Length: 247
View 1 (cartoon, rainbow, N blue to C red):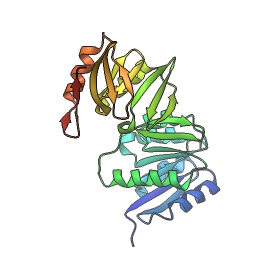
View 2 (view 1 turned 90 degrees about the horizontal axis):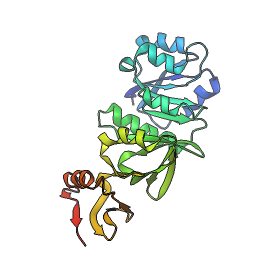
View 3 (view 1 turned 60 degrees about the vertical axis):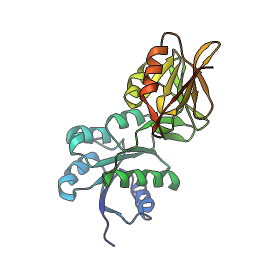
């Protein structure tokens, strides 16, 4: 069967390039059409090989991965998946419009999740919006649609999703600006809530409370009450308006 998409692998270490080939072996829709040892070779290969995807190392001799994107421009790049030994470039990678950021050594399960996202994007399906977080094992991608709420923690933000919490090195004020277009709103000074995850609004002795689908209750400050309740009423969950129950 002929592969549907062409892959370029760029890494200065031969063992790393072999590793990508091995990880790609279970995915016959993707074929490696070339390997590059540095950024200069990558730039020279784009027009001849015309890859659909590039697995790109960050730190390469001469021209690094980010410089490759800058010189080529993001608009003319194939889909980029960074594969590197360093986790501290993750934020910069997503700012460069990379689809994913994998930290070596990458597990087969993590690589498989990336391949699913790759195939989805290459087939023209709308991408799932995600946020990148750090974990003990490197980095993880948390879909925005799976976030319950975000809690301020000094100069950090704690992201709550599926009963787990991830710490993000970003103040909630800055995070609010990024998340607002994706359906998040401030309930109070220290809480940012995904509106679609609110099951109902209730009145308690302390004021308005947002009840999330997982049962978590988030108080809504008096100052933000009108704006938050108005945003909730405009939202629909499963085709119906969020409940607004007074008790």
